[in-house]
View 1 (cartoon, rainbow, N blue to C red):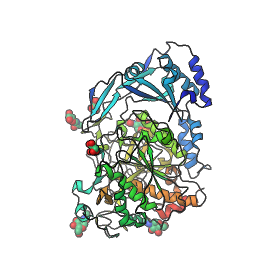
View 2 (tube, rainbow, N blue to C red):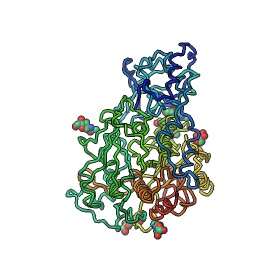
View 3 (cartoon, rainbow, N blue to C red):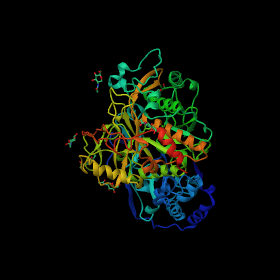
View 4 (cartoon, helix red, strand yellow):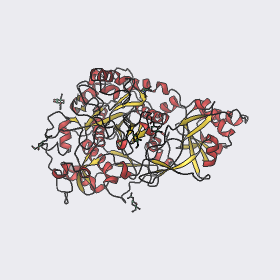
Length: 630
Ligand SMILES: *[C@@H]1O[C@H](CO)[C@@H](O)[C@H](O)[C@H]1NC(C)=O
Ligand SMILES: *[C@@H]1O[C@H](CO)[C@@H](O)[C@H](O)[C@H]1NC(C)=O
Ligand SMILES: *[C@@H]1O[C@H](CO)[C@@H](O)[C@H](O)[C@H]1NC(C)=O
Ligand SMILES: *[C@@H]1O[C@H](CO)[C@@H](O)[C@H](O)[C@H]1NC(C)=O
Ligand SMILES: *[C@@H]1O[C@H](CO)[C@@H](O)[C@H](O)[C@H]1NC(C)=O
Ligand SMILES: *[C@@H]1O[C@H](CO)[C@@H](O)[C@H](O)[C@H]1NC(C)=O
């Protein structure tokens, strides 16, 4: 996705010439710290100094224009009362609106040139947001006044290169958001330790004896509503959420993308095992796979940890939206794996791999205004506390831009209630520690430009015809308040009403209770006891990872109906679902909580709550309301 400077679009050549002609000078001598990590990341130890000659593809995130307006621009195309509702932007409009000022590009280029980097070593990203510099560790350390170390993950042994802080000249700071790789920890630990949804067998829950788990001959599971409290099937979901008989009619215009991160992969045999039992016409049908960053759908390693998430996502998304073709955005190669950045890089060209290199022949089809629900998957859950605020904001604005172009981005809200990944909580200065008592919000769930999906359950011994509760089996629905993002307008009324009418029994020592920060999740769907075909057997899985593809499937149904009516996709749905129009389109969840950090967490109650959001969708109601919008 990076172009040589020489090939840059016209608007930028002027700036470059100015820069090249600029006299070399020492005006950059005063360095100010630009970013500093508050503490070393939990679970990683300092290992050794890297080889000074090691190549380090440095990415400089330039300050973009108009980001202050992003929320209102996004609202103008996604708020139901806006005259611009549904008028989504083209990728070019997005690039033009947010591209950095020429002055910023010029100033940063001048600094790099003064620091000894020739023009051939500098490239610019397709969306103009990033400069990439080819440099060695030693050169980067001089440039940024930084000291790099290799960190080792205590459990997996995985290594990551990082520095504790870095500096840039005082007059450059205002032109830069962030520089990578520096203080940000972008690598997920190995797949085994990050499985973010869980199977019954691991935990010895009752379902493991009554469920279809480990049936050696893969015998059919009866499609019945009688046992939905013990095993969720397609029929249970259709009954719970009033899903009308669905047969996609706008498949060629619609798109439902699911992102999976290598080495996570689906197994064809697992899909067919599931389809044979629950959706026979899909046997033999596969997602349309797009490989990002040299990705492979690997089948060498097979286990629950490698296949569980992908099998789950595809089995339910494909079966619920049949015959819609699902686009599988498989991200990351076998060597480095991949994170959210790689995926964002592919969809809008603004983020990149750690070790460099995108394949433009693969990524070239993007950016693309995909009119569908994207389901960002949860394998690489992170917490706000593990990335810097500027990195979180930079990623979040990219999601906002995708919303401007008409994509719906869904993320699961996390599986540890008010605690963060792995049940970790924070100390009073906001750092992850073993016995922390402060709640630890999930990212990207707290990004106000995505839709965060929490988890519910059919309560034990209840039927699908009784109200669900917040999920309290195996996992607890992620929810709470951000420490980074301000509250978006669309949820102000709902959230302040919750704080006023149901004040939680906690203080600012547990969560940001100012009422001025983003609260999550936005909505919820069942996340307990899903039957999936996995490694040749049926097993039961739990998690907001189950909820998210189900909601994505419902949005795909909504888009199908809108496209058939000659309308556009719904795009960013939050301003709509919090509006009065949708008051009755959700089943309010009023029981259960999301315990964590040695507390009961928050409690689900009337109206929006930080456990199940607005509640679970009633698809029969959602479709006509969305259809009534322009
Ligand atoms: C995956 O398979 C390869 C090749 O068999 C093996 O070397 C590697 O250790 C496996 N990885 C894991 C995490 O099991
Ligand atoms: C919080 O934890 C970090 C990292 O362990 C530590 O540096 C900091 O001093 C702790 N803060 C308090 C108030 O204990
Ligand atoms: C947390 O644990 C550390 C050692 O693991 C201990 O020093 C500290 O006092 C504990 N803090 C609290 C609040 O329990
Ligand atoms: C559900 O029903 C079973 C069998 O009647 C009973 O043993 C169990 O305690 C019930 N569970 C709950 C949560 O009511
Ligand atoms: C609470 O959130 C607001 C808005 O994001 C932020 O400005 C404020 O600093 C946060 N307070 C604390 C104590 O983190
Ligand atoms: C969903 O909405 C339909 C149509 O208004 C209604 O008949 C049905 O009872 C609702 N389902 C639930 C579970 O509330």
